[in-house]
Image 1 (cartoon, rainbow, N blue to C red):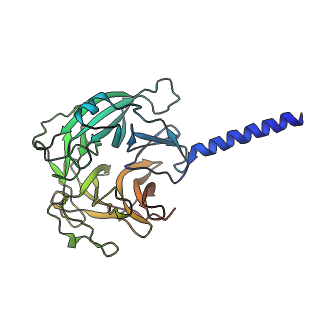
Image 2 (cartoon, one colour):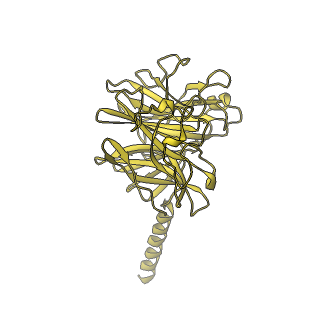
Length: 339
């Protein structure tokens, strides 16, 4: 009997240990977006085949299988050298279906495409769990398009019309009207409006952070995320430079508009398309840079979900979640503490 009890105890201990090994805090992610299904939260982020994490409390996270075990054939054909490292997914739910937009690209070039996959559930144990890839939604081509088809974000107008915001560097952030089924672009791509750019920015009007100007020059802007609150659409964007570890200078700005297509103005009335943008959050002694955010509402509270380059861990990008406080119609977010 004692041996049986001991064996059961060891078995339970082993199970508990394995479970503990599965759940992680302080996880490394890049370009996170979050959604909740039933009692579980899911993060989708940049990674091989699109990285996925799940959590019951937004603190302890379990790594799930990637969306794509192998690279979509169309992506390999469209982007030479593509190795299934997929960027900046965006997740949304509509009419019983989850829509996952994602980007494939050649780093530093606008040889890029935005694709779409759908699923009826995010729960991997559900027998109906299956991602269906719908291929390419929009493509940018060097020498033909002066914009970059990455960093997609779905936003729905007040009348229910879907739009896709996207972009990085080049001519800035763009927005395109989608078809009613959200599976294609409903307009020509030759004259897509620019909703945000740094090209005409004067760094002096934005505050300095740790003695450094907020604007790094050029057109270092990407990662649009449009969040509707009351009468306004809020356009969040990331400026300056990601992906450089301790040399990362990423930071987030915002503007707002009563129209989904803009113009988006900052709190000084400067259009984001002409270099405007109110600073939301920048790096500090704990974080070399912070950016590529999503905004989610859970239990009536709004949260900023983003990654930061951890100064205490060699500049590795980590998941950060901060509650948003709205002050005079503008988002305020505290500087995240060190882990």
